[in-house]
Length: 179
Image (tube, rainbow, N blue to C red; front, side):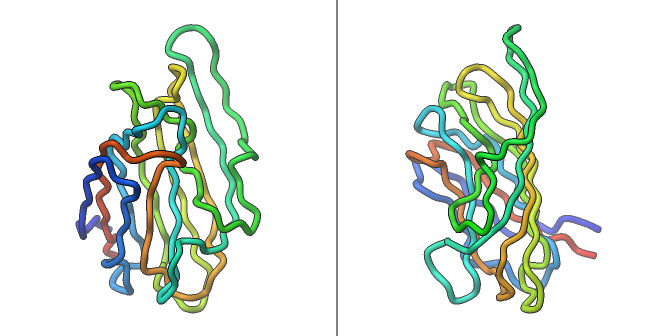
């Protein structure tokens, strides 16, 4: 297996970063590498949503599960926990991938989202994500998200954004996985 580069987008005070082409039946697995996603606003969530082929609005129904670990840069604490408030149970909101990212110059979120078999017209679409970010109050956060998009239509578009304000800077690379 090898990663095959498809496209990149760099945000610069952008409301969203969307890939509206390049997700097709050529690959059964797509990786989105998010590098130093830095928000304009403080304490905001980095998130994603998709469109089924021919759909608009980035509002497909999904069911998700989230757990995270965190550690303060000083001595204020650490933990590993299931984070139910960021789950969706047949919801159609943007799914949080990295929680409460800070906008200090040394704060951002990076990680990988994997979308499995998005062009299938038989099965629902599974995804996993692992991201590490700088929480707004000086914690490092590792968020792990998994779930499925409850649609059997092909998925051909994906959108990324922060929960409030613009993506001040950051780059997202899209890869296909060759078998």
